Image 1 (cartoon, rainbow over the protein chains, first blue to last red):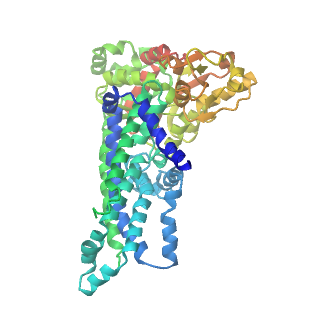
Image 2: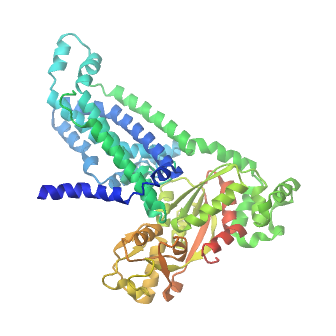
Image 3: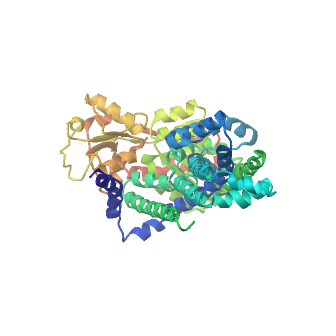
Length: 252
Length: 324
């Protein structure tokens, strides 16, 4: 019985969203300029954030999985902070770091005239901030369960570090890498709180899909229909991502 | 086993690429600076005059109070060939005498959305070279963003308090001009199912009322009006901008909300407005000003001129705004 209630709680809201959707107007709503701008921005920022996550996350996961000691344990805890932190808090923290009056941002602005907050780059940073732990934790878990036997064998056979990384470790990590990347991308795509505070809400510049849903929904009038249409699109994207990374024991 | 230097370098390179890519697409600091420079170089004569006319805007319709640029034959020829300039007198003569271009970014109170969308269309017709980008949000949200270094050319607030925050922080160039006033109405579902007739009706049990948060202009006005009526309200929610309140009522999440008269008028019948006498105690003035760090000050001044000029006043009045 509780299990059934749990399923109902998880699925009924989605049913309500489907019921609310105006299917005849759906193509028009999704093809409108604000939606296309938000979608294009979300895709660009999400992909860019995922790329940055991969570049930063793989070395970080290797570090966490292959080294031991108190510092590493502390580091592992710190890496998960953005995971449990309300994204709004991350947004404020990023703002005080990188706004034109921020800890580092004031010097970037003074010396180079660079404004990071309220730009598209800020969206990428905010998304990276919240998505990176997903990738790192997925990879680290996989690395730990793999152990380092294969690497040790490869090393005894005379393989260099680079060869081991690209010919042994990363191929073995492929499943975890795929699911971690997909989770990371999904998280980046759904980011709202940190983006809203750190990057603002400007059409075509920082108004990603979730912010556009919020803005359209609160805009009154016909905006709510557009918000529902965009929400459906996000649900579909989320489902596609989940199906893409669902565990298939035989596939790998 | 992991060399920290190489991934780090890669990250720096990736970040640099990302910054370059974003700067190019979003038109922020790096790419818009040259545009702003060229615009201000082209308008050396007009920029100061546009500023001075914006501070006294509605009264500057007297052509003699205008500036050197209107006595310049070429610029007056140009402006007289633009038909719409006859409705927006000398203030727009000063700005349309120079070819404006680039992007002008406007931060405007959420309650201005419908009106400013219309004015933007007018403005872009008059200045085809200028792309107007407007961010609509609660005035207090916008001030916070500006104070944190968000880049904008024009700020239009829904009350004096938030504009004062901006001027106190040294963000505004010159003195802001009040261009409209607005009063509150009680918004309810069409047909007024809860039978609300005054502010006291909002506090009745069984009525879920939504208002703006106190720091947002509509919220501070709501607070003033409720105080004048001697009503203590326990709102179901405090929203960050007036349009959020409107949606809550229109969608049926709330039974009533305190919004501006103009929001009810622009809602297309999704809500019904009820006047109440204490609204006279809480009339909001809308000031507009050009930002000190405006990347495109010439176009910003021209936009302010449209808002404060005859064309803008006509559009604002049609939407239900009061005269300044």
